[in-house]
Image (cartoon, rainbow, N blue to C red; front, side):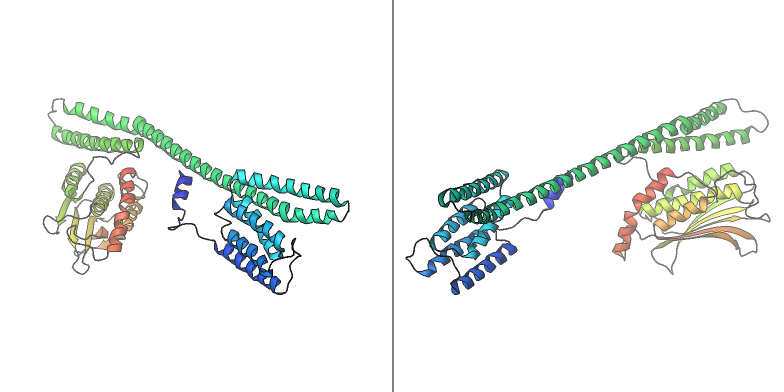
Length: 448
């Protein structure tokens, strides 16, 4: 798959084959050198003495044409070069023509087909051996070995050089393909390992957490079916109702998370994402769970019917949920207020303020009402920073002089019907929606 993608990205020539720039330079240099040698009459004696001197330039021109097509014109370039070399030896050889012929042989082995490369290499060896042996037999002179050595230099040396470079190139291509296949297999193994780990996590969540939540919901339902006792029955039934409602909701969230873990590549789950519309239900559950003099009030000062982007609604809901949970665990008796408003000085933002009374007790007295990991503020800050917002949390002085704990978050929140002023910022916040969903699916509620 990776190799196919690499092939598809390879540049394609919009027109027919064209000479390579290096081939053009070689041909021009060979033609210039041959003309210079011809001007100074530095060519060998022709095999036949008649005819004009300029005939030696015809094989040179033909060899230059063969050089221009050396990369894409095999085996025709080799045939043209061979004919030109034979003619050059006949009419009076130029050294430039012979040098260009060695380059054509080298290119035939390197750029031609595998069959052509083998044929050229074997033919060059056979011709060199036959020429050397024939000259020794014909002239019976040891000097003919020098002619045989020259023949080997012209025929065998360029072809063997091309064969070695071709082998190195083929080995490099094979190693590259093997590396791409290894990377693809490693990616497949990684995905399989991630899938297996997600399946294991789903089994653990189902066997440990989901079963406990199911047991709580079943037992609280059974307790609610009993006759109401005479004394204190209303408070008991209210407490059981709160327990059942929270356990059922937690069980639904747990099953949703288990489904996501088991089917990470499937379509998105149909479960609705929490939004600001659910804040009333959230505070209603908090009032039922408090029961010790704490009240929870929602003050929504946004325009009626306003809809915010889904990532903003999700982050705002989770910030309020975390702050209310912390108020249930740590706040002193009094009024816990949740305020949502639009800041006139900062258009396109949503302000969230959750205030809870501290009383005379210190903020962290070492004995919280419920156990926790102490990482709630970290979770809220992560959610806000994902949308490039701001979060502050800490004790402040209220108007009446009492000490309160305030969580203040400011989120960039353009109206869905209005285009964002900064398209790039809106795009970045949209890209971070997936990361925010991961927090929504995987993070438990935490206290500060």
